[in-house]
Each structure stands twice: as C-alpha cells, then as structure tokens.
Length: 533
Ligand code: GDP
Image (cartoon, rainbow, N blue to C red):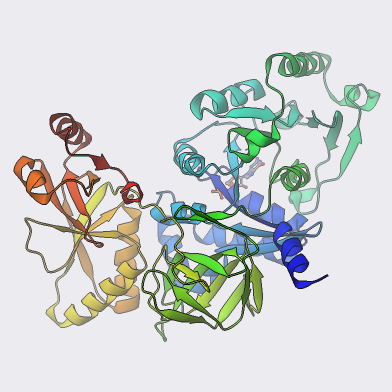
C-alpha cells in the first residue's frame, strides 16, 4: 500500500467515542466490559479499581492526588475486529463540570447508558443536549435489564418524548429482572439467549435461535411470549423504519437492551456500533472543511492537566487529531499565538502504561508533556493560520472570589491561580464595578471550585476560602452593543464586566432578572455562549 492508502485505511478503522450516563447507570461497568471484549482484560480491572476509588467525593480527591490513574483513563485504546477504538473518559463526578463537555467535543459518537429501572435522569439529559448540538451519532444502551425495569415500550417512548429523538430498538428484551433471558435482534430476526457466568467475569455464553424455536418458547412463560410477539408486531407496524442516515446525523438512536454486569448484550452492542458508526468526520475551521487525509496535520487541544508529577511542574496537553498523520517531534503552529510548538514527549496512554507515541491519525488522541503556551481550544497544525471552530464555553451558574488569608503565601497563590486558570478548571471574569486585583471565578457546577481549592492546597500549599457572590446567571453581550449602552441600563441586580478574552458579559442574580433585563432591553443581544459572538 502506498502512503496515502495506508493513511486512508488507518483513518477508516478508527472509532472515537465516549460513554455518557447519569452516575450509577453503569458507565464504568460498560467501559470495563468493552475492554474485556476488546481483549484488554488487564485493563478491565483497573477501571473498577478507579471507580472504587472515586465512589465518594473525598475519595475522588484522593484519586486526583494519584494523578497517574485518573489521567491514564482520559483515553483508553483497544482493538476489536481490526478496528481501533479510542474511548474517551467523561469524568464521572456526581456534579457536572465543563470538563465533561469539552471531552464531548473531541468524540465522533457516544454511547448513552440508561438504567432501565430509572429511565432518563437529569445528567443524561444535560449531556445528551451537548451531543445533540454537535449532531453526533448517539447509541443507547438500556442497562440493568436483569433488575426490575420499566417496560421497554415505556423506555422507548421516554427517549422520544423527553429527549425528542427518534428511537429504533435494534433488539428487544425477552422479559426483565430475574427472568431476563435474552434479546430478539429485530434486524437479523434472531434470538440471543444469554447464560449467566460467575460474576460476569467472562464473555457470557450466547446461543442464537429463531423466535419460534422450541428452546426459546421453553424458557419464556406463555403470557410473556405472547406479549413479546405483540410488542414486536406493534413496533414493526407503528414505529418508523431504521434509517442509518438519521443515525449518522444524530436524529435517530439505535437502542440496545442488556446488562453490563452480566455481559448480556455487550457483544451485540459492539458489533452494531461498528456496523453503524462512522470513521472520524472532517471538522470545520471557519468556513472550510478540513480533509481528513491532510495533506497537512491538524488537531485541537481539548484538555490540559498540570502537575502530573508534582515534583516537576509539568503539564499534559491532550490533542484530538483532526487531519493528516502525526509524527513524533513534529513542529506545528499554534493558530492563536502564531508561534511554533514542537510536539515532543508524546504518549499513547494505554491503561496505566505510557507508550511513546510515534505516529497517530485523524481520530486519535495525543497526549503531550509540554510547557508551551497552549490553551484549551487551540488549533495546532502544520498549515499556518488554520483555526478550528471554538470549543464552546458554557454560561457559568456559580460565582466566587478565591481568597488567600496568608500574606506569606501570596506569591504561591498567584502562581497557582495562574496555572490552574490556564487549565480552564473554572472561567474568569473582571466585573467593571469591582476593583479586585484577581478575577471573579465562574463555574457551571460547584465541584469545579472544590477541585480548584483542593489543587491550590495540594499542589501549591495554599489554603483558600471562597467569597461566594450572589450571581447565578451570565450572558455574553453581542459585540455590536457598546459599553455605554450597557452601562446605562445596569440595575442593582445585575453587573457588567469582561471575560478573560476581553468580551463583554453581564451577570444576573437569577433567571428572573435575566429575563426581565432581556425583555426591557431588546436592543442588547445576549448570548449564552461566546461561540455565538
Ligand atoms: P457509573 O457510575 O455509571 O460508572 O456506574 P457503575 O458502572 O459503577 O455501576 C453502578 C452500580 O450498578 C454498580 O454497583 C454496578 O455493579 C451496578 N451495575 C452496573 N451494571 C449493572 C447491571 O447490568 N445489572 C445490575 N444488577 N447492576 C449493575
């Protein structure tokens, strides 16, 4: 094969995705099982260990201390049937944070795990909305079918009514709870009967049969069998047909039923995921679509982690490759600064082991230890001037100043704040009316503040407190509006200022005051994300 064919086939075999779910729905278990099927057995254990460590918030903080573990899980790579999977970890905090959203900007598909006993939960909804905005394909796994579950029809209806997405059940469960026997594959018209294995440690044995097979009827009660036939008939008649194009556009979600702990339905999910998902899609930079095969290399920074090793203040920068081939020690240009950056010290993170990375293709994630001036959203490319569309920032809902009470720690405080703000753990703002030497911090969830304080203490030795401010909403002001115009209409329950890029923002006490303001001042266009500016 010549080089361009190698590149094409390497890109075509890449699948880069994330699993999203409400806490406890089974994301960690499913990740582990996917690794099990991907042959990365030794990794499977490490995922559970990680989860155990972060069961509670304080344990999670402990885990953060052992940076190696949490970082190594940022991307898990495994091979299955000749495909290279990049599974990006969305941090599984109880509270949600911007970190999670940014990871979702770097994937080409998501698997949404739902606890079949609970249906759609709050965090699933939030994460789903982010995925929908990007139009990425969404695969749904109805997990925990071995426990009392909502009726499958109800679960499908919920997807359609709550998430407003077309749902196509690829397979249909044969009963649930202790009677969960298997699934009927509607596209192939075959039944997969599952057998339990001790602790779900091995691939669950499966036998494939016809729905009319005596062995199938024997394991299902007569009533349940009739009901399943009726449901399947109804789905065929009343529901829409499978539409792969709609799946690719994120308009239709293929639905799978199973149980992650028991390995039921995992292989079916993996196989179909491969069948229906697509290789990395070309990304847009301004009005231009950047071809996957290059001829130039390009990627963008979606995550930064500092102080991986507390002894050396090093930072690990995660780059999603969008086009061309990456080669070790490559020189690229940062479009934001116009400066050249050499990508040395690049790694492939495989579980807890780091391998030196020599080459990577569109779809892959490169992690690079560097102190170069890089920020989240920066485009790195061998083509000068290329800039991918901005990673959206989300409007913060919690605001506070970080306070240091010890004059002797002032230097460390400023340094720590500078470093951690460069990681974009929280956003920073400069309200016009307050003469503060340090910025007002904004976060989508308060956990982002906890992480900031914890890391200030742990990595810079500075104890801090929070001076919480009463704002709960923020909007970016359209650049067509002048500061004078805004200044005139600011009232007691709002304030204006700038973000760290000098863009004008208005802070509101609550959604009511935001709405009131918008209605009264129609000439001032507000945006909930700076990406719209
Ligand atoms: P996460 O918070 O989404 O990562 O959820 P976990 O994977 O940690 O699962 C939460 C809990 O649900 C754990 O106790 C799992 O053992 C359990 N669990 C996960 N999948 C299943 C399943 O298919 N059936 C049952 N009965 N329990 C499950």
